[in-house]
Length: 242
Picture 1 (cartoon, rainbow, N blue to C red):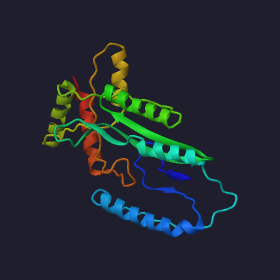
Picture 2 (tube, rainbow, N blue to C red; picture 1 turned 135 degrees about the horizontal axis):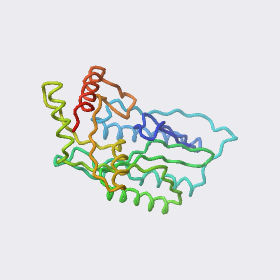
Picture 3 (tube, rainbow, N blue to C red; picture 1 turned 90 degrees about the horizontal axis):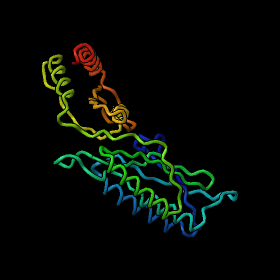
Picture 4 (cartoon, rainbow, N blue to C red; picture 1 turned 60 degrees about the vertical axis):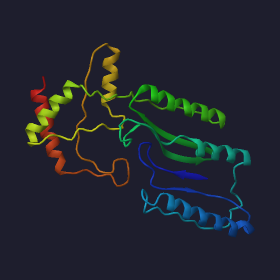
């Protein structure tokens, strides 16, 4: 069995697997696991310095079953080949993702393996490409594919008049210019843009919010001092927006 993750839009904090082997193969398996642990921890020493990998051994319960060899191979192929991480970047410094995917939940129930991914893109065309990759992969590995929902893509508009108005209001409220950021997320503004687009109406959206370090991780938190500033700006926008 395998399992990991708790929510579709959260970076998985831990995962586990149960493997089965002959008793005489235990020393060789442990040697291989030790070697892999050293390699993995070294590969991710800068991004995951606290990474821990461990294992225990126990006799197999006679009532337990294992996957057929071909099923296990197909499951491993699916997990190995499933596209994850950043695929394209949107800025000149190549530091901000434009399209990406994250494996949020992995679970196995009664021999059925289920992988739940969260796909994000700032461009519709790139979203189509990512989805197509999963369609091909599922077909090759004998898996089914179901898309629960698809958020519209919110493409960045550097000439947004609304953004300039909100920028001015923030400066007036805080006596300093705001830090404008492009973000890689499927926030709700995209839904409003898509609905108005279908009606043939031009529509602009800006996203404002409090400071939230380490979003979508178990370390996510909210900077309380930023709440008042955000609320003051929101009130000013509602009063003065042209």
